[in-house]
Image 1 (cartoon, helix red, strand yellow):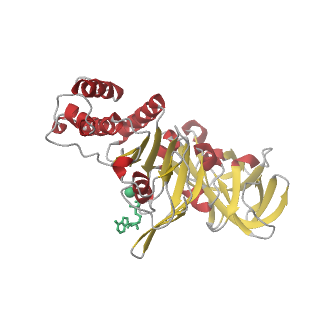
Image 2 (cartoon, rainbow, N blue to C red):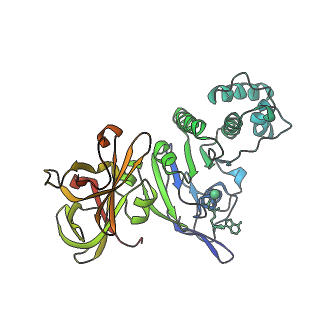
Image 3 (tube, rainbow, N blue to C red):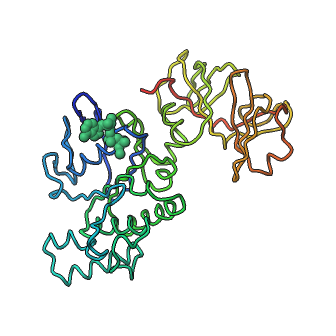
Length: 355
Ligand SMILES: Nc1ncnc2c1ncn2[C@@H]1O[C@H](COP(=O)(O)OP(=O)(O)O)[C@@H](O)[C@H]1O
Ligand SMILES: [Mg+2]
């Protein structure tokens, strides 16, 4: 723990303290270049940390080579050996481990069934679709029963439909095996759908680590709330804090939110984050019963298929986006005066700058 990694002058990782429980599915989520692959390679043993230690199952493995560790790494395009059949690919590492041929055969069949490729064992990699090839790569990595599987963007080369299907399959496989998976992705939806916990990374640091619900509902920084899902941000000054409630004074009014875990002081600059799906829209400018409200005029209406996004200008330089069902947006036109409202509990207040 306390892992850092320097490549020359590039600080790829900075003081990472990160713990995964046995049997958990954890995602490392962050933009390209934030250090996800480096962290995964350090866990796998392909890189040594510049400082800090790595422990797996109570053992300090920092100096252990990859093959001694109870881990296996699957890459973005899990390159299969092109001259071997699917079966030979899956059995490769078992042969190296000198398993008996009958035991290898039995395990290969088991793995083919697990990734639902029974009957394709004799094909060459060139005869497989992208999704099938990726499933073979997965079967190959799982064949030797690693207790920890490390996956570096294994689905990012697949198209959307297949990726969504593989997300569910991968999660099901992990549950069935009870193995620990550490999964790297830059796709926030993928991380939300698949994980027990998500570590959000930015500039070589883990900026928040929590369940998908926690991360989505209680982001601890503007960076996290903006990175995970769409959000409205209103900046202001902390007006009062009492017990579990914090009030932010903004140019468009005072808005309350539950007090998060963050230490904010009265008078400090802070930002209110509000998810578009939590915003309700009422025609006209009358007051509403619900928690917080603000009035404005509709500036933009964007049809997105499964929902409609409506931008309401509440100040010359501030727009709040609401996400409505198509039928709820019927009859609305740009320019209409509207009132927006939301439950106090739907808002989150956080420091203006990421820590
Ligand atoms: N072998 C390397 N040599 C030099 N710099 C590297 C090397 N590997 C990664 N980096 C740098 O470290 C940072 C993190 O990279 P990486 O872990 O691959 O990010 P990610 O997987 O999140 O896209 C980047 O700035 C990258 O350029
Ligand atoms: Mg990477």
